Length: 459
Image (cartoon, rainbow, N blue to C red; front, side, top):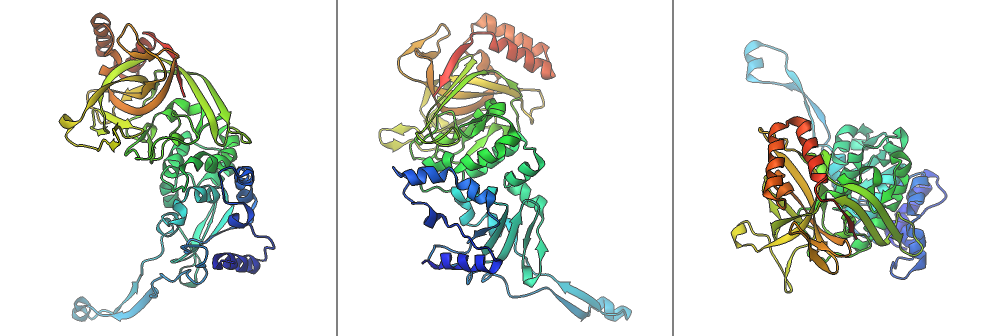
């Protein structure tokens, strides 16, 4: 038996707990075509939710190394001390009593020692940690305790409470248990968690949805909303406004529709977490159809996911690389290919190829750093599926009405009339000069949504 398993048995015995669950022993670890793994993987959350305590072998590099002997070995041996009779020139000159000086030493920090550890960068471990009631982290910097109300460590043989507030700022949704306790979960907290989760390591990136399923089930009674491929129906439009800062060279695949962040391999972010919030929505969600993989439900892997929204399509000329300028941002879900070669990022856009793309504006709002109330528009970059046609406004549309998501863009309000006749454009521009504040946004949004709305199905 590997040493790490032996150490876990020793801890369980010491705690007086008669039963121990070890994933590698209790589940056959071959995902492809394995009915045992497919059945048990969706129940993993129940194991961790109902466990008395979870043992995190953070200090162990692999199963044969063990963790008890390695725990605390990187702790600096020096302890805080008090130096009495500390004399300075000022004390000598004024005949004062010598000072007593307390010398502190650096102490283990929970975020750096636990959250930033290689173990907690694994996707499956994030689920286990989020759902566990209590966790004992055995790290090279000592033993740490974590539960929904407390984080602590055994610094110098003493019990020391960590700053829970600071940890929550850095680990936004290790508060799943807190959300269950308080019956409140802000939608932005979910976006923060997904942002963190998307950076986790997976040996198979296709597992991103299945490894998240138990967390989603746990918070659904709090969210009180329908779960949709890693997003929630009560905040779906903002949930669609995600982007990949640096697209991975691994081609898109997996078991999620293209409108879901889980369809890409790279780390993602949400516009809702940025400086500017697109308050006014330019689309309406009509329907979402999800078809789970055999033997699973909508919380797991999907065979198909169709999102039907109503909005006005337009066109934009965009560079084939990501662009991060303040006034114009383009984020591709996947890198463009020139044959078998990935089109690399270039700072000089004059050397970059451009193309005309179909885009669907989804929201707009004021730029927080703008002094002249300039509007910012967010739009999905889409690729028509199947046969195509060109509408009266020069926009390339899918005959079937189906599209795949290709990326996300943020730009100024010019996008909203780029395909409209000059007369209509002047009317909109005149309206925008007249209205200010939220009235300006509402007038612009209503005018845009009434122009030429169509049903768009993103698959």
